[in-house]
Length: 213
Image (cartoon, rainbow, N blue to C red; front, side, top):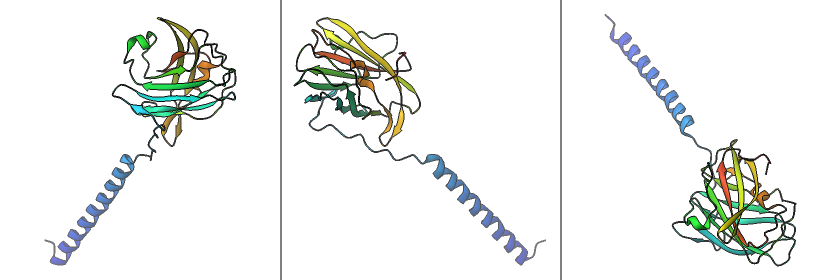
């Protein structure tokens, strides 16, 4: 039979072991559940939101190319790069959505459904875009995954018909806003809008184009 002193020592040893195990377990839990800080995607100045989309009024386009703020909607937001138009005094407004909320205002869906849409509206017909796209900005979303490929497809609205513009694929990278893609304005490079003044840029999951944004 253990003496009182031996029993007390054994009890203390068991208690210390239990505390040590608890500390290790708690440390593991904290490590497993820690998530990197992610800054909230800022809103565009003056953007307007509805339950179906967010919009921003027409902004002037630089002949050197640049970026436009994409209205934040459904966990998406950031900027869209664009090549400079050759015509002066061109401007563009944007509408962002996660669904084709008005089927007639969107090109027919293909075999892969888009996960984000950017509708664009120019202030005039026949705008011609240049060939140089600035390597700036980025579109971020919780729906994107770093290292995964995504495809941007453009289409212009000509009455009840749709004309295909450019398309390209891009790979999501990490930014302070989370997973981000860049270069979607590639769909407008060397594009002559002709009789169209509006269109849609669709973002689809996967590498569905041969050219890189």
